Length: 340
Ligand code: ATP
Ligand code: MG
Image 1 (cartoon, rainbow, N blue to C red):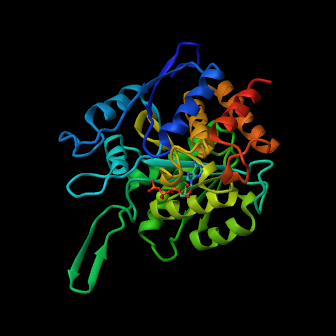
Image 2 (cartoon, helix red, strand yellow):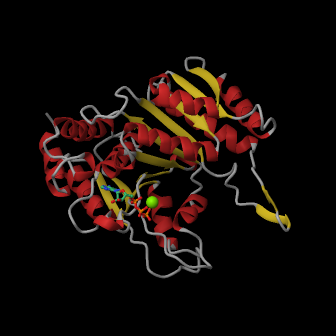
């Protein structure tokens, strides 16, 4: 990716529910900020594509594979049997092996703590979510947790590279190796090996139950956190709660050779569709992550600052943040706060 003025083409999935409304606002803010991005808009169809066995079509996937960068709004998972879920299709076909969630206290938006600035990095392909379960005999189920050297090293390398690129000081590997001696033992062994190649970054290991207690009592001690799939699922939601909920939390899904698909953490919010009530912050901050990923840091900083300043000012907040403004007025306020 170049950081020059040549526009970068990025895939955009407007998604379902409030997805299209918040995607439009992100596009509007990016245009106002003169971000050199061209959107390749991809609509997920209403029929299963036999080539992918999913509602995500071959063309949808090829767009991300070609552009290597994308932004995705929440999508509704169609109910039925005989096809793959949307997220599973994306994760498998694009080999999205790491999920990244920055959690930053938002000045002016009051939560229990106001000094949180941490990032969770979750292994996204194996662990407890390998999908290998069977009933051995009636009443006995076996569920396999798979930990491999390849996947553990890959996510650890990503965590340390992320720490280096974003000037972070510490990586904490989260585990339960005192009980799962082989599985989590291998995970932290890989993290430890990778850490030796990054002497400038502090490395520590923490048992997952203690991590939960530490997170709710003294979250500011954490910086970058790296963990297997199940712990990552739980802890990343816990961290989102610490800073004010899913409406504010962006995320990124990272694949091989720098491919990345960013998305808001929340769902399609069917209860508020079309009412000008949706908060576009999580989607916008996901867009900011996308810009940083392709080295458009100046634009990323400007948009992030405008968004955080607007929330801190508190005059034009959406209802979920305790305000009375609609999506459009909140968006206007962000655009007004750009570039000062
Ligand atoms: P899905 O099935 O797509 O996950 P859901 O019914 O679980 O949808 P969520 O989208 O997870 O709903 O939302 C849970 C609650 O949070 C809803 O009341 C919703 O209105 C609210 N919510 C979610 N996202 C936003 C947003 N961006 N702005 C404002 N409110 C939101
Ligand atoms: Mg949901």
